[in-house]
Image (cartoon, rainbow, N blue to C red; front, side):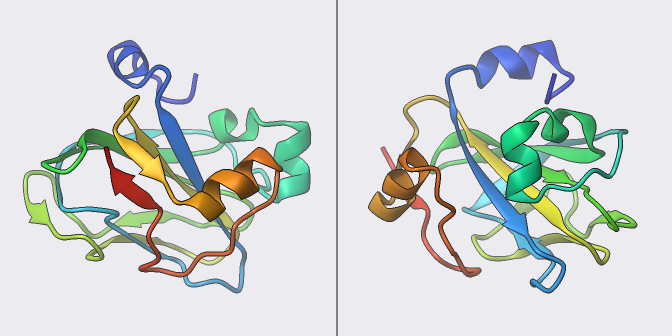
Length: 157
């Protein structure tokens, strides 16, 4: 189970997820997608398997098997959301620079990965976000959408 938490699993059931995959040459800091307060952070130990699209298409459970840090965020914009930083091949550590209980603004740094491929999963509760058209279309066609830090994923409903 991805979240290793039955209560969160129920709360985010039928929600939507954005998977942001980072290549070894990419910028490896991750940032808040909206104004939010971190309510809880917990770690799930696991492997460091590759998150390359070929690997995850054939074995989506990689995200359930790899080491990850899960943050529960509270936001006035979209209620609660989750950010999951997933370790992958050659990632020595996932470093959280943000602290529980403090308000962070959209775009502020939340943490960083040590070198290697890695992934950030952002999970929203059901019917909270209307994703950008290019993201929706590409996802339906099984195509990654190239994005830069600061690009909009969508808007709150």
